[in-house]
Length: 486
Image 1 (cartoon, rainbow, N blue to C red):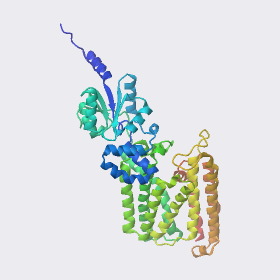
Image 2 (image 1 turned 60 degrees about the vertical axis):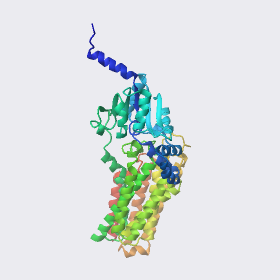
Image 3 (image 1 turned 45 degrees about the vertical axis):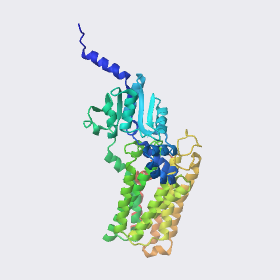
Image 4 (image 1 turned 90 degrees about the vertical axis):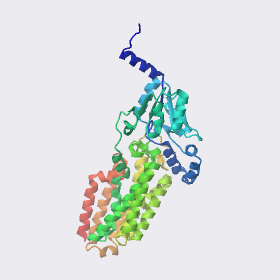
């Protein structure tokens, strides 16, 4: 007489079969919220940008060869990659249960083995080897050859994984948009990712557009408040802000490795994996082309020329100059000065050397403040450790503070000399009243540096200044003093 099987028996049989099946997982977009091909590309762009000219030549020899060359020339820190905790939990559970856990990826095997060594979960690693690109049908054939069709489970994230899912006993994905479109595919996500729209807004850093208010300074200093001037200045502000956002995107792409070590910057869209690095070049091209296009079509040619200089400067800064001590703060200060020059060219207002000098010293103080906050780390950190992606050491903190405060006070000295010059009499009926601006500026600068010294300031100076109520009180008082002097 045949014994009948109960649902409980069948479940136990399924569990026993599952415990013997290999659990195979993809890497890019599945185990990590990143793409190591693009990570390698930007890593090489940061350290050896001239080598990127060879990328098209490497690609002609196949994607596997391209991945091999990029992996050999890049520096990837596997401990800081944005691993998906939900997938890690599955792999760790399978590993504890004695199941074979396999990393099957189209990334180069050098990178795959790096991830494997870091996690310590995989019994086997399958990856591209410089000749064969282990992706799509090629990966599926390798898995079937190794385990047999229906004798492995597979976790992937894209349509390239469909051949693998077709032969998997249990098909799983981290991409919910594919569920229902691929037969028997189920989601393994246990958490909701950041909305892409929010990440796209965040990566443009709209709060940093506050810097571009400097474009209005020449018109305001010349007392030009007519409609056409304001409209032109606003268009210049928009064009410059778009170009600046493109620069911020490029900077974030090149700084992903360093950002992942930072307590706040690790949450930036590219560093955290909320946005794929492959979207970065598209955003840079979009922002720069639209911003420069507005400048070229609707604003004076000289303004467009300054925009071009700004773009070249920000690219050079992101690629190399930010790691050169002293030169980096000079470039940062210069980018502030460029904004004032651009604002004057946009509305056809000559910019005085007094204004440029004043802006230079204020900008230097802010640039030194930015570096000071980055370098002034907690005392338990080793003093001799280099600051990631910067050219400074912990012991430089005193020097940075001294240079920053000195620059702030020099800006006040320039303002005092300007107030007593003959040039000011052409614009103000009571120029002596402008001297009140000096103690106001000294108060604001000294107070800002005091909070930085106490480590109570936000690590982004622009955010810190914009959130400080004293900034708006000082701005209002300064405006009132200037109005009284007219």
